[in-house]
Image (cartoon, rainbow, N blue to C red; front, side, top):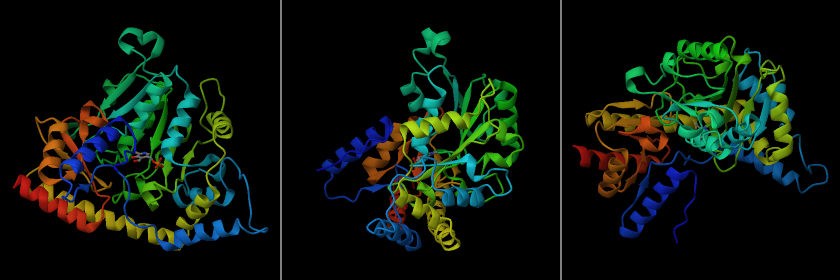
Amino acid sequence: MVILICFSPQMLKIARRKAAHLLKYPDVQVISLGIGDTTEPIPEVITSAMIKRSYALSTMEGYSGYGPEQGEKPLRAAIASAFYKDLGIDEGDIFVSDGAKCDISRLQVVFGSDVTMAVQDPSYPAYVDSSVIMGQTGDFQKNLEKYGKIEYMRCSPENGFFPDLSTVGRTDIIFFCSPNNPTGAAATREQLTQLVKFAKDNGSIIVYDSAYAIYILDDNPRSIFEIPGAKEVAIETSSFSKYAGFTGVRLGWTVIPKQLLFSDGFPVARDFNRIVCTCFNGASTISQAGGLACLSPEGLGAMREVIGFYKENTEIIMDTFTSLGFNVYGGKNAPYVWVHFPSRSSWDVFSEILEKTHVVTTPGSGFGPGGEGFIRVSAFGHRGNVLEACKRFKQLYK
Ligand code: PLP
């Protein structure tokens, strides 16, 4: 039996295509470098902390029920010190969650259906999908006044994957992901300074997604709060998913600085707190024990080792496509390689690769119109599978 797991309409379509392919070729080894799910085991220093916490639940002394909705204090403090040291963010600004995707939707509930929003094009589909669910788009051709619209900020090789802000209309909310999924591009300090100024000038709120910040190798900012003035205009959401293989364990966090206010002066964090307490009762205490272990010196070392492994995969994939003459982007600061197939449809390339190499990739057009002509190859995979996939790519495109 083939089980379909629905992540988004695009992911559902890819899962269907993969399932159909498996039925057609039951004896071939289909390799998935498609969805961005981690594959390597969680280091034991982290799982043993979760085991200890779950065993403690069977004891009178160790049992605990509901925790604080915002997350346990030691974890909030550890996140503040690991990722926001000297940036003026303290544990009170941090909300621990069951993942960045869930927080993106909870933020949309805070913003409501009357706001306008902008996204990088291409970008992680959850921003647009959650906006559509909230009714922020409507039929915007007909109902622009009533529903607002989504502004697609084109990010391409021509503009260094950073939008030309002089052509972007004002919106209430700007979703911005760096390093970006799918392009792998990490914004520079100068670019983020421009973005913060743009938001300040327009009275917009940036929702900055740093789910892949730990993959940054150069000195590009790991957090929007490295940019002066960002605390007055930005929220940051992040996750242990791609840091520590917690895609199934579920743990993330969102930072809403106390300085961030709605136009009427009301703190955004107070509204978010209300939503968190109403729609969510806090992350699993077992996951939080794992998160705390991730941020211990041993945990940080072990996490970086796994990330180093994925980075080697990324290099193998990048070298393969580069040696075949393709223009290849991303990779350096992210676990995604963004390969250009000029003048071709992403879905045609996806089908060609699947049919001829039995490797699942992701068509770029599913991330927005700006992704047309690209495919995303994920570096999340066992080494043998990555090497085998690259061997097949070489046979196909030599
Ligand atoms: N943000 C980006 C940019 C992602 O690519 C993903 C997952 O692929 C997420 C958020 C989701 O993170 P989480 O597993 O914490 O919900």
